[in-house]
Length: 182
Image 1 (tube, rainbow, N blue to C red):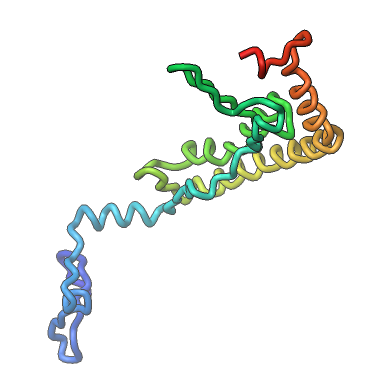
Image 2 (image 1 turned 90 degrees about the vertical axis):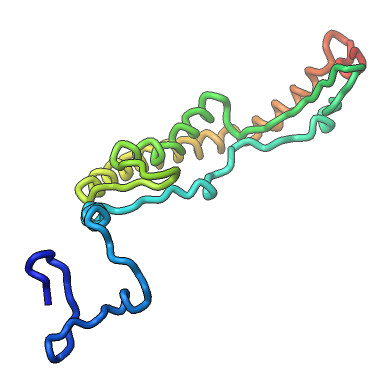
């Protein structure tokens, strides 16, 4: 039975006498009017959570400087110097394009949803098809560039090795070994 004044559903037994609801029996409080209104607004959309732990790792790999004949750590008195070397399968401009493509969904989501908390957003039902269309378009663009990247990588697969050899050779400057010229 629905209370005509409040619109609240009231449970009744076969004799039309009010009966405590199962939630009242276990002590769950009733929603206040504001909470009920907010719940009705939330029904008009979907909650979206962003999983920050499933992030794709960087496309660069650290390499030990010792492999190139360079000390990774040096200290002279109070001065410390640390050397790190990273190898990437692509040049800097291509890496920037790839990283920009990887961020597309994260950049699109705020345009179609509202932030509720860190990593939690609310998207209206009307915005979901628009978001999916934008994401599909971005993924098509990303797929096209991924194929270009694959072709790029195939044609330059030996390039990191050659550049590593040049880096190793470059430590010898005009006949003077850099490692010894500390």
